[in-house]
Image 1 (cartoon, each protein chain N blue to C red):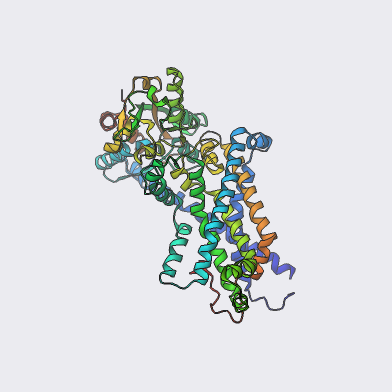
Image 2: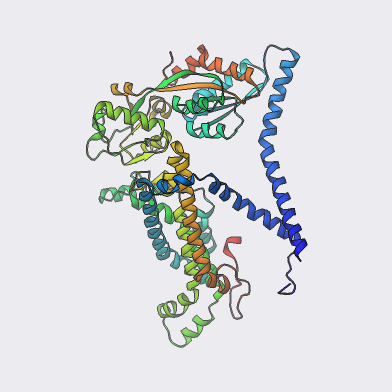
Length: 287
Length: 273
């Protein structure tokens, strides 16, 4: 009773505990299944390290691409006013609910050899299928909504009061964006980027469908796990744990570092819309 | 505050175990009910077993086993065949973890041997079909592939199975015996993924089974090659030891290994002897 009235009935804690166990128990099962004496040799084998390296590199590239494409999208969705805005938001968020395999098929018919753009790219001498580029595209496709959602939430709860002041003081829109808006939502942007990175790291279905699987080129860690599972369950479990560890490190980093500020100030939980904010603070995911 | 909190944790743990027990119980009770009907008939002394039979079969058997299951149900009124298709190693893993299967049909002897070694089979497995590799190319054959050696030409985008799965092991065996080394653009985890890359036109050629070429119809062109005989995949079938409906399982195995099975499998391109 440190904070007075907590407002949470006790039985909620029971269900919350059940929820936590539901998530943690399978992870504990993986840890229990690990063949510890063989763990290091398994995760440091050449194919494992190649897959891990490829995963980290492609996830970093995808995150960069998500920032380049996602920041403008979030700005347009949060601050712009135009017809079809709701529709655009729905479509941008679609990969969140789409099975990744479907995303892979869609990408295949876009960038594939016979695809919408792929045919022209092929003529220009650019081959995307079976390349690392295909992996990055697949990861960006599934990870982009995470960045857009986080940043749009941050933008909405930050309000546009400071921007309005800056504009009345004579700042041009680009200056306002650079000097006021972006610094204001930086924590939200950071946590969005971390989420995108984590989602990219775990991408499997779209990559398998669209990019193929070749060591060092397209076989990321999840694909390596999927393949190892065929013959060497120990290796698959060890690599799974490695991926879990990397994911926990990434998420942990975001919530301890800039993400914590984001959760307080904006993005994750817009509790109280600031006075003067024209828009009610909505949680876009919930809609 | 101490005691209630501990109590809360206790309740939480109890809830979780109840939920988990309920979840674990669902499939098991289903199987139990099914085998119950089977058992009651044998108790009544009827000749023909009835009930639900769960058959785990390799993905490449999907078309043929779906057909054979329908024949089996028609020939044995009161029976129902539940089919589960997946990669052979997945099926073996599932059965090792206690999945309620009555019959297992694998796409290679290696995976079946894992179950036999673990003592999870009822009697020895019986080989009922063989399958060999074939080259699948898009209908237009853009890379003009005519032989296995053509696959190694520079610039040909060929997709194969990874060495860890049976079709990849077969491909490696053919490579070894012919001395032709392939440089695939992708090593897929399943033969259906290889076929998908060919039907979508992403790959110039893929190494799949002759039966896959037949199933794909006119979406791919099949190019058989003599060296495929160097790596023949054998399909074994067996009754699972934990089956509660062994009579019915044996009847299904008899159908697959008998004349009706040979007919359906042979039509699909499998070798049956």
